[in-house]
Each structure stands twice: as C-alpha cells, then as structure tokens.
Length: 302
Image 1 (cartoon, rainbow, N blue to C red):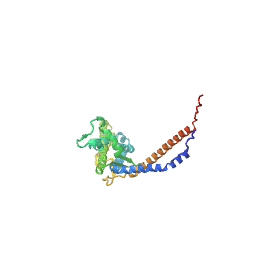
Image 2 (image 1 turned 180 degrees about the horizontal axis):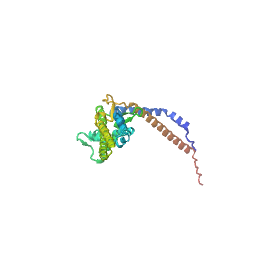
Image 3 (image 1 turned 180 degrees about the vertical axis):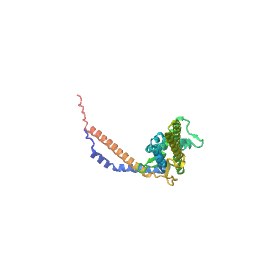
Image 4 (image 1 turned 90 degrees about the vertical axis):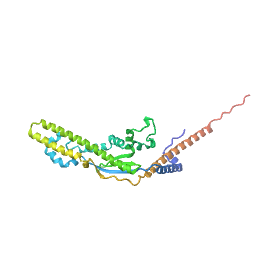
C-alpha cells in the first residue's frame, strides 16, 4: 500500500524540480515583456473633483431659510440631505445614462470596437445583428477598461480617470463626461426648484392668513434664489480642483505584467512538477507490480 504524500514530500518534490519552476517563471516573464511591447500604449488622463452639495452652494441663503422656521420644510429643495446629494452626484457620474449618452453623442462604438468596424466601407464588418456592438456593450467596455471613478472618503475629493490609446482623446473624453454630468445634475436641480416654486405659489394663493401668506412668498423668494444658483454653469455640483491635462507618456504596464508573469510561472512550474512526479510514481508502481507478480509454471504432461 502506497503511503500518502505529506507536506515534507511536497517540499522535497518542489525543491527537486526548482530548475523547472525557474524555467517556467523565466518563460512567463519573457511573455510578459513581449506583451508589453506588442500591446498598444494606454494614456491615463485624470481629473480631481470636489462634489459640492446644496448646503455649500447655497450657504448664503441659509439664514433666510432658518428665519422662516418650519415653513422651510414645505419645499422639497430645502437645505439638508447633503450626504444623499453627494451620492446621487457620484452615481450620476458613473451612470449608464451618462456614459451611453456620451458614447452615442460622440459616435464612439466604432472607436471602442475598432476590430469589428470596417473603416474603408464605413460600416460594421459583420452583417450578423448579434455580433454588432450595442450601446450596452459600449457601456460595459467603457466602465471596465476606459473610465473609472475613485472616491476618497478622507478628503471628500473624487479622482476621475480615462485610460485610452490616444492621449488627446482621453483628456477630451474626460472633460466632456464631467461637463455632461454637471448639465444633467443642474437640469435636475432646476426642475426640482421650479416644482417647489409652483407648489408654493399655489399654496400661497389658497392661504387667507396674511402672516402665513407673507412667509410663503418669502420662501418662494428663497427658492427663486436657489434656482438662479442652479442655473449658473459656473456653480456646478462637480467642481474641478485639479484639471485634466493631456498625458505625455503612456502608462507603464510592465510591472503589473511581470508580477502576473512571476505568479503564473510559479503556478505552472509547480503544477508541472506535481504532475510529472505523479506520473513517475505511477510508473514505478506499475513496474513494481510486474516484478512481484507470481509466475505460473506449467507441469509437463505425460
């Protein structure tokens, strides 16, 4: 009966096959260097943003809102809820709507899926509808390989990054995405404040008590001021702290590829040594079985 392989046996097996493991690591590292030379360079354009919410952008009006007391709660756009507003702004920046609208507006599907696009005929290289990329395909590719958002919970700042093979396009895309997000957020705020004003106007017309009517009109004045701030493009929710510049050098992927090469080489080398050892052990067992097999001698007849 064969004894099971324990940890010491594995260590001895790996040590005996250390040369083969080293060769596997060298081969994988060579492939990593080759891949770094063959793959198209990628340029990283980044921008640092501050997400400004209502209590920051409308701080000059907070005194008037406090003087109105409980009536300020009548407006849906009253101060407060900054944490939710910040998360909404970041979710909008990464949303399917913004990215698909951006890809569609700039006609980027042929650019993102260049291998499937026939530049000479100016159409998709395939006629199969299932193989033609859609806006959803573009969104998934863009979020996975091109566009990323990193929220720094300590400083409250947000790092937005676009990685692409063309440095000018990377910087331009990043600026356009931030601008489109600000437009989307400002339109939403404008619509909210306009709805608040309509509601307050209707309520004030139906109220007969003069002090309450005056307070409602004062609250309407506050909402009008909020509306003016929301319509100001220079006071957008996403404020640029460190603007994007066109990257001059491509991002180096050699270190990451080498790490993957070393890890992959070790795994493949260990696997090869284990499989080779198991095959040798099996052959030895078969050989021993043949040697110890009893030989039957036939007695002569007669």
